[in-house]
Length: 105
Image (cartoon, rainbow, N blue to C red; front, side, top):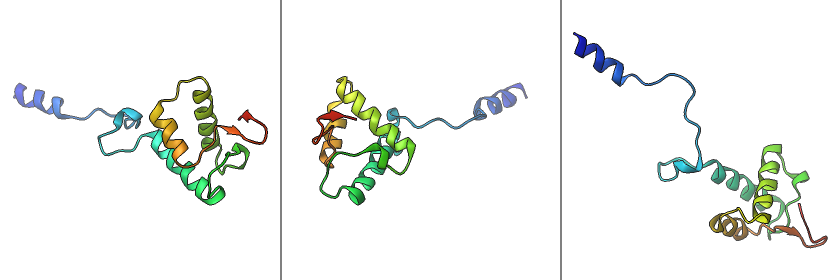
């Protein structure tokens, strides 16, 4: 009987909040948070900037996406953004600096 109780305890799943999806979940069939934000930005750019351009974060629909864009620019400026991520952003016409002012935002 003790063996039966032990095996039941071992097979029970822990309770609590579900695991947060992170970029380490790649390859497990779930998109990373970065990929989800990228897709949101891509959709925004297709509607507002069909030929690419500088994304003004004040015109973005959600504060979360605006913050994500600012974070990508900061990481790029600090040389902490991976090459694959910067290339992916550039592939949709994303500009790091505003050509008119020469400033990063």
